[in-house]
Length: 220
Image (cartoon, rainbow, N blue to C red; front, side, top):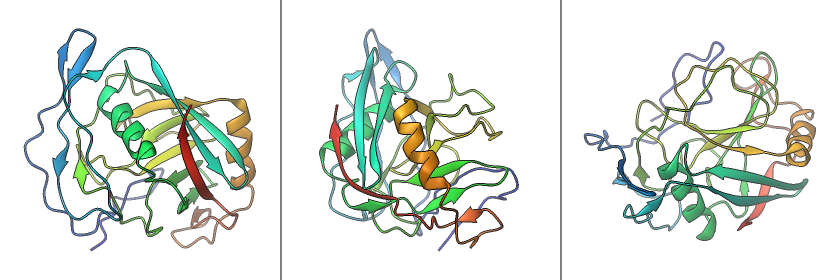
C-alpha cells in the first residue's frame, strides 16, 4: 500500500508499505549530554536489522558516516546536538550494513533538487521495521545545498529513508535535518543528478537514470 502526500513543491516522502499506525510518540528526554530515544516497532524490516538502543544516546558533537557510491564517496557529518535520535539511528544502520548495495531510488531535478536513499528494496516502501520521532527544532527552510534530512510518510514516522539536497529547495520544515555533506560529496550528488530521471512521478521527478548505488557505508 503506497501513501503519497501531494508532491507539488513537496516533500521527498518515504512510501510506507502497509506499516501499522505509530504509537504515541515519546520524543527525547534530555539528561545532560545524552538523551533517551524511542524506536517503536512497526512492521517487518526490509532486511535483517536491529533497532538501536534508546538509552544514553549522545546529544553533543558530531559523527561522520561515509557513503561509498559507485560514483565516489560522500561523507555525511551528523549533528548529534541537532538531532540525536536521528543521528544515532543512522549510525546504527550504517554499522549494521543497512545501506550496503542499496540504490537511491528517487531524484528531483526540477523545482525540487534532492536524491532520496535508504530503502534496500529500491521501491520507496522499505524500512527498518521501526519508527522514531521528528527532531525539527533546528530544521530550516529553504533547505540549503548539502543538507541531509529524513524522508517520512507523516509526523513521527522516520525510519531509514533520507534525502540529500544538492541545490537550495523550498521544502516545508517537516523533515528532520540531521547532517551535511561537504563540497566533494556535493559534487558527487550533483553529477548523479545530472543524469536525470525517468519522470515516473512527474517531469523531473522519478527514478534516477545514473547509477546511484551505495556500495557500502562506513563510520568515518
